[in-house]
Each structure stands twice: as C-alpha cells, then as structure tokens.
Image 1 (tube, one colour):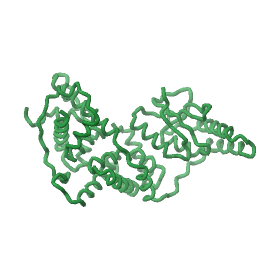
Image 2 (tube, rainbow over the protein chains, first blue to last red):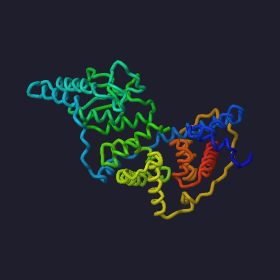
Image 3 (cartoon, chains in turn cyan, brown):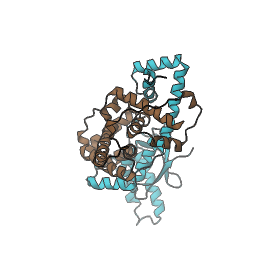
Image 4 (cartoon, each protein chain N blue to C red):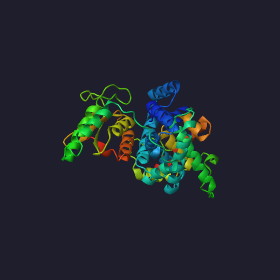
Length: 212
Length: 183
C-alpha cells in the first residue's frame, strides 16, 4: 500500500467532526456510497475516535487550588449587580414578612421564602429570551435537581439561572428541591453546568442530574 | 463538538470579562478549565507544571479578554494562549533527544494494518492511554484537536501556525501511528 494518503483518507477525520465544506462532504459521501473499503475506513476511524474521546473525557481535572490561584491573581473587582426586578421585590417582601422574630420555625420560613422565590422567579423571562417560564410546558432535554441554601438571595439565584441558561420547571418538593431545565443533553456541557453551580456554594446546597 | 451557540456564549462571556465582570469570568473559567488543562497535559505531561501553566493562561484570558478580536472561535483563542505558554515552558527546559520542539518534528511513517482489524474491537481505556504515550507530542496534540476538540483543519492550522495541508497529513499519520500501537 502506498504511503501517500488518499484525498478521502485526509478528509474522513473532518467528515466525522462535521467540519468539511459542502463540496468536500459531498465528495466523501459519494466515495462512501460507492466503496465498501471507504466505509470500513470510516468505521475504523469512528472506533478510534470513540476510544480517544473516552480517554480524554475521563482525564484528570485540575485541582481546586488552580481556580483559587487564578481568582487570587486577577484580584476581586466587585461583581456587577443584578438590577432588582419584580422577583427581587417579592423575595424581599417575603423575607421581611417571615423574619425570625415573627416565625420561630426557621425551617418553615425557608420553605415559604423559597416558595416566594419560585413565584417571583416564575415571572422572569427566560435568560435566553425563550419566554415566560411555564412549569407545564417543559421541552428541556435535561432536568437538574437543585437545592438552594437557606440564605440564597433571589438576585443570586436569578444570576445563577442566567449563567446556567436554565429555568425552573418544578418544585419545591417536601425537601425544598427545585427541578430546573437546561437546553442540552451533552454530558460535557451538563458537567460544566454542574461544576459551575457547585462552585456557588453560597447559593447552591446541592445539584444533580434528575434521575429518570 | 462545540457548536456555534457555544461559541456565541463564549464570545458574550469574553465581552463581559473584557469589561471586568468577574462573574462572567467564573462562568468562562468553568466552561474551559478542563478543556485547556487537558490540552496542556498533551503538551506538558507533568500535571503540576500543566496546572501552573493553566493558571497563567486563565490569568492572561482575564487580562486580554478585551483584546479578543473575534477572528477565531473563543475556544481556539484560549487554546492558542495555552499552546504559546506551553511552548515557552518547553523551550525554557533542557531538551533531550525525545523532547523535540513541536515545530521541528518530521512526520513519522509506520506500518499500516487493514481497517477490518479494528471494526469489531472495543478499545480499552488502558490500551488507548498506552498507545498515546508512544506517540510524539505533536501527534497527540493534533489528534486531540481534530478528534476531541473537533476543530476544523483551518482552525488547527491557524492554532499551530502550519499550512492546512500539513494538518491533514499530520492527522493522517498520527492516526496511523496510533493504530499501529493499538494492534
């Protein structure tokens, strides 16, 4: 066999990744349709790619200290404030109403404040302009179960949902857990969102993918 | 594959980072920390050194976000910073015969097996890892960029500073080398 790669062999990796031009893709597909050898080469490449992806997907992550070092290196300029909206005002009102001097049962206050949080958040538009949240109309491919910390502020939760590009679609249940929807089913992106949410320990008590 | 939507989000985050928005940087960091670190490990096998470079890279991303001109995907821009810093580190160390500069490597050629030998196999993680360690750094790098990051040839060429046709042949020979070490 010659050492000079064929045009097809050079293009197949990019064909698998979907990064070919239309003309190149048409060429590859014509070759695949006409040649069993070409199809076998593609299958071999697919197998190699899966093996490599598994290897790199399971690779090590940097230690948490890397993030701390970066954040220390860049200093700590003030975070931009989220402009108070209706949700903020409702949340504040509920928090004031159920201040500790009026409600000795702290757990009940948490549930009620978080219920108010849900009501207020449900009036906000989706972060990406997808419309007003509707708990009955759920087209998210992935659901996450989110438990907020007792001291979570509406503004922080709103910012978190915006950063996650997520919307509340259910909850809270008896344990105070919300179900939030995200518009991706890619494990890598979901893991990114989980990592991000877990880094907000002042807001997030726990978050995981909802089990079917 | 990172989509156009992913890149649009990255660009929006970079714009906010360029204005000094630390929360946006938190998000950007989380989205790319593992990707950049994984790429660095391909170039710098020592995980501690790779982590030190990661810190440098992300600090530069914070500092230079406003300079991002948008001529490439945000991911490619960050990987380019990572590559530059990794090469700086490599250049600063004494080179051994096996530690050849990435840009000076000849394309190795190996024996090729028939494709049918792979089609009914399942590749075990351990054997993939072992095979990858036997590749040159530039072959590991180009496989990672093409098969894992799923960058196009043009993007890889821009990132590595080599012609697009060289990227194509490098991916081809890297795949052949990998396969040779797996069979």
